[in-house]
Amino acid sequence: MRWRWTMAAIPAGLGLLAAWWMRTDQRPDPILHLRADLPAVITVLSLAFLIVSGVVLMTVSWVRRQAAKRVGEARFQAAEERRRLLRRLDHEFKNPLMAIRAGLANLVPALVDPAQQETAASIESQALRLGRLTADMRKLVELETRPLEQAQVDLAHMLEEVIAAAREQPEAQDRHLQLAVPRVPWPLPEVRGDGDLLALAVHNLVDNALKFSEPGSVVEVRGFEDGTAVVIEVADTGTGMPAEEIPLVWEELYRGRHARATSGSGIGLALVRAVVERHGGQVSIQSREGQGTVVRLRIPTR
Amino acid sequence: MVNRPRILLVDDEPAITTNLAAFLERTGFEVSVGQDGEEAITKLASLAPNLVVLDVLMPKLDGREVLRRLRQAGDWTPVILLTQVGESAERAMALEEGADDYLNKPFDPHELVARVRSVLRRARPGQPPLTSAHRLTSGALLLDRGSRRCWLGGAELVLTPKALALLEYLVTHPDELVSRDRLLDVVWGWDYPTGTRAVDTRIAELRRALDDDPAQPQYIETVPGQGYRYVGEVEVAP
Image 1 (cartoon, rainbow over the protein chains, first blue to last red):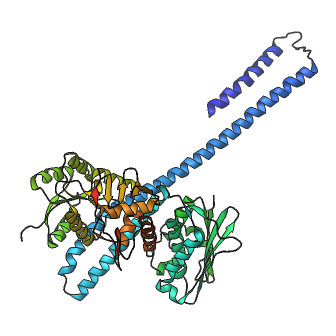
Image 2 (cartoon, rainbow over the protein chains, first blue to last red):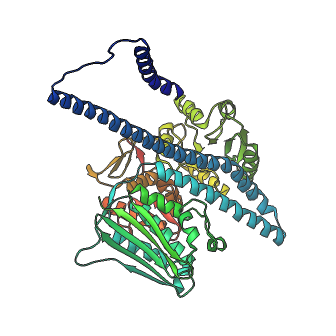
Image 3 (spheres, each protein chain N blue to C red):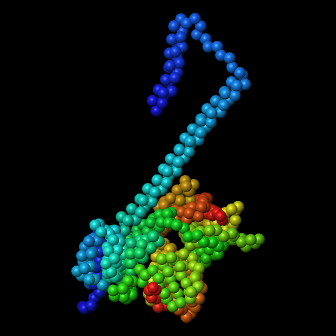
């Protein structure tokens, strides 16, 4: 950087030196007389100004583009590093977990004491839990990178199926699970993408809504058209969450204060976000502690 | 005990081989253990096992390479690869390499026993397994796995990629009871409690395309409360 300033200072230094030399050289008349055609001078000056400002503007936008490119590259790199970490974790956990499960399969038939059997069963369920967690992380990485199936998805039909499946869950028995999708004057438009993955995303949200609400609560799933997108909302009158937790809920393995008491891998919402973003959409969440939560998925129709 | 099937179990992790070998022995197999790919090759030649359980990631020679060399040498000993079956690229590779089946670590050891038994039952001595065949026929159905197309009585069927992958798995595992969870795992790459509905939807799509009556199935049979079974006769097509 310093050499550039030095280069810039050279013409100024030379000019000053020449002026000093002319003054001290006792020349009779160190004055340059110039006659020029005024319109020509104006033309030359305006062209010179145009060139200078053009160069300045191009430099500024080039610098900005470079900076944006660097930010983009850094983000891409960070995402890649995160994916590599998740893959490695999955890989490093796999063998120890496999050894534990195989060991237990040998041990369990030999146990006669009910207390020991109970211990073995609890170790097994914890090994299964860890296995699910690492598998979920791997699936998340896969979801972010593998090619997406592209088919027309009838969202209204998909929502009906998800609700029908959710109604079979034990938590749904004492909660009011409702679905609202438009039929007139026209139904929900179709979107392009992977219907099974979209169903998985909505299922995760309905599952959360059922888990984090008391018996008697209302869980409402709504679908509507908004400009060039379909919006799916999953709303509940559940426990809600404090404002400071809201920005963090989309991160993998994040568990809110209320969520710690409830079973789950902590990967559900990260998965939902990955599915929706792969469809070019966005996710958002609103929540009030003690009142409930609404999660919004916006999926473009084109 | 006579005529216990001989299994060669190859994995570089002693904690796994020790425990799995003991488990497989107890469930009625004779087990030898290899620690890496090179040992797998030598033991395959000296022991002539009925089946090999092969881990993919190993030092010296990985499981893929062992399998490739084996098949190139015309050795069709059934192989179960321990790999990630969820990713479609991995699945395609397993097909190219001629594995008979694959399992994701960590798996339920009982599931391995079930896989081993069904692979041994399916195996046709000295012949390539259905799982590595590029074209398969079953009645009026022709499945070209290389180009991912299929025909029924000469007319091409238009299937979604998932339905085709599902059909492919069922056709290559004929006469085998496959649970919805296993199908979700191998075809979709993920499972969740109500995901089994996704399987049922695609099976319904397949039945419509194949004009298969669930009450009197020619291709796909429903095993109530358990899963599905491919009942058609499957052969390798020229």
